[in-house]
Length: 107
Image (cartoon, rainbow, N blue to C red; front, side):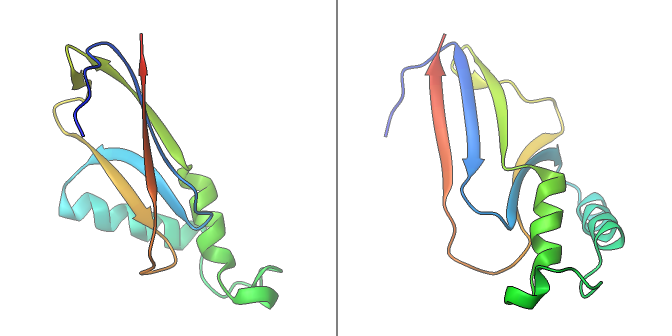
């Protein structure tokens, strides 16, 4: 599919409550640091009430910290990302079949 938007906003989102969309540097050590941080902040099996249902409360809580969407400007037909910025889909409870939505709004 081709899009002719040269100026506007790109909204990237997920419909899943145990996944997130983030923007950061695509460096292996940093990606591991992010996962380590999330695991320290929200450890699995810490007595969460939601675990009575399906034992994945930590995944939901980590997704709350990450957020389900990111909005980026589009300029001259390209996403405005910093030199090292990349877009990540963060899976907290998988692997599973997931959907990522990309919506382009023309300015």
